[in-house]
Image (cartoon, one colour):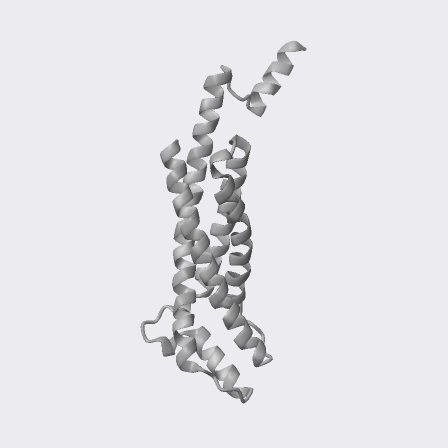
Length: 185
């Protein structure tokens, strides 16, 4: 269990660093759209908001990982699942930003044309790597959150089993409670 928690801690620190980078990149792209007084597409704001929440939650998870009890492991698995789902949605929204020729990426085209229409220097050469990094970091974080969700579920399962061995009884299922009540009557 110690090695699993150590591996989870390492992955969490990696996730936190990548989420900070993704927040910076997506925040910059949001600012670029704001300068042109344009609507920010969901492919940009969803990773931005998700990363901001993930940074806050992961900060406490990193600090408290070795202190997490059974209930907190289940809560951590729930948050990991929620972040995994939102990063999957973000990857789906960014599905048109994975072209090796970045000039075909939807977000880059949208940003370039929006800024050009507003009469602002579009910085096309500087925004192209940022759009590629947005798509790549979103995909990497999705994979890491799938991994940590599975790791947290495994750790919670082991903690439940150890608790059952320690206390000598298993948790009752709802059907077992009904049978016990009906036998009393």
